[in-house]
Image (cartoon, one colour):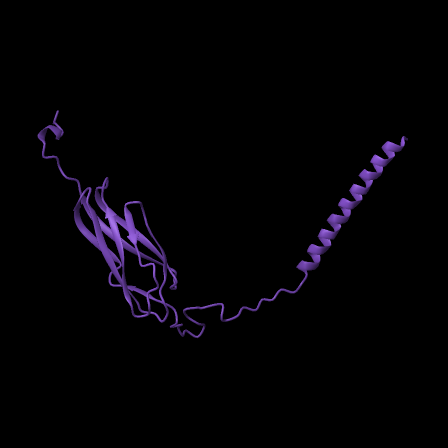
Length: 176
């Protein structure tokens, strides 16, 4: 066998052995790290439950209380934009933070306080409803994400959207 072919075969053999050594080292490292005893202790400082096992409540959490959770705009004309201010109070013992407010569709747009609401303080969530292209009875919702427990709160709006009739007789449908 020529010397050049012998060197190539020898290099391939060395690479194969090195690959095997790396794989074995990785497997040993993985197995030795997974055999360590895992700590299952959780600090009570990391968990804030609203109620403990004995039924007592944790008053250091914020709590959001709305004056009304559903507002009915009644009859509105198609195309109108209407607004309602949902008033609420933080009745808990810690600052209330609203991290987001999302309408159930693009026609329902909430505006919420971006600053923390102190315990005992009142604030509003303004909801704008655009009725363009809608008709009949509609119900929409706004989902608030807060630091309360539970973390989500849903408020609702309703409206009966009346489609205006045309005053121009040429635009009215004709009977055949």
